[in-house]
Image 1: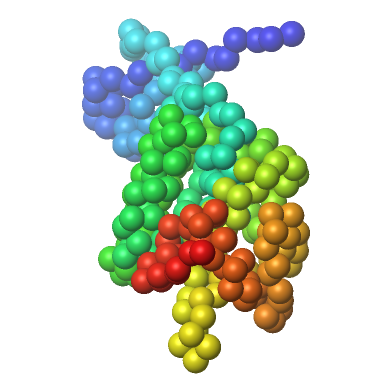
Image 2: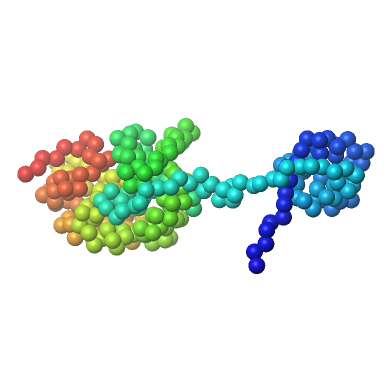
Length: 277
C-alpha cells in the first residue's frame, strides 16, 4: 500500500531567531528534543512536521509555516536537466559516431565524453555537427588550461541509454571487450562510416619517405576491436595486416588509394596527398 511522505515545512526567520535567543544553548535543546537544532538555524531549508511540533511544544509557541514542496527532479541528480533527444535511427551518421566512441570516446555513468587534440579544430567541429544531427542536442566543450587537453561531453540519460541500446557499454572498453556492433558489421555503408570514425580517432595516414609510399595504420589496445576492425575492413576489400600487437597496417598502394577515396577520413588526411588512378 502506497503511503504519502511526511510533510515538511519551510524554516522561517522568526523560527531561527527564537531558537537563537533562547536561554538554553542549541546543544542542550538538541539533546532534549532528540534532533540537531543547529541545522535548522544554519543549514536546513525545511523541517519535518514531527520536529516542528516538538519545537512548538518546547518553545511554547505556534508557528504557521508554509508547506515545503521539494523539487522531485533533483532526485535525478545530474540527470535532472536531461534534455529530450530526437528519435535515433540506425544510419551512416550513427555508425560513424559509434566508431568515434570506440576510438577516442568514453561512455560514462552519466553520459558521453570524447577527447581531442585541441589543434584538430576541423575534426572537433565535424564531431559536434555529427552529434547534433544524430541526437538533436549539442555537445558541451571542456578545455583544460593545465593539461591543454580538449574534450566534448554531454550529460544526458537519453543519449546514454540510446548508445547502450546500440551496443556500447559504460566503463573500460578493454575490460568490457567492446567491438563493432553486429548491426554495423552486417551493412556495408554502415561499416565504411564506422571504419572512418575509428581511423579518424585511433588511426593515421602517413607517408613513408624511405619507400615513397602512403600507408594507413590503426592502433588500439583492445584486441577485440582490432580483430573486428580487421574483419570489417576485409569485408570492404582492404587487407590490413598486423604490424605488431597493437597496430594494423594497410600497405598495398591501390588499396590505400581506394581506402582514402571511399572511406574519406578527415582528421587523418592532414598533410597527405594521394594520387588516384
